[in-house]
Image (cartoon, rainbow, N blue to C red; front, side):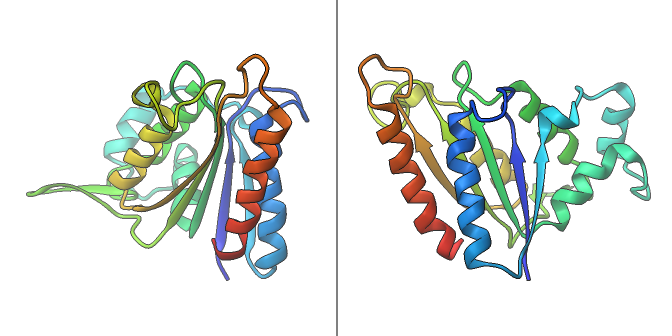
Length: 198
């Protein structure tokens, strides 16, 4: 049995997020094909995650025995075998609340460590999926270099030792004249196929 952590980062009202239309479908299909697995959902806006305080910064480098409530997100992340992120591209990057969450899980001695050769990720063997929706075309072409959301998540997961990282993106959703539903439906079909083997 695997543990799946589904991390949602979008402030839109229920039913309004195109990202969640895709990611919720992935989770639904995943459960059909992996009925024995345990899926936990972490909606960051419902959690009302704040930016790190001085105490949180101290804990990042000296977590002690790990019983501090501020470390609960790191414990949950470490316990998961598979991570699913779902977020829109906002201002060329991830929503700030997702970056705040990343700050909570990057804990020395828990998710990575420093060595004489530099930092080493402690989360090897996990796999991650990022599902994202974007207003323009940021996967290919001239604006691909502007995309810093998926790129950041892929990089920070690699820093933590997670190199099995897949991305499903729906692009051009805010371009005038584009069939948005067709783009979302195509991404949903991709997730349905991926759900069988993820």
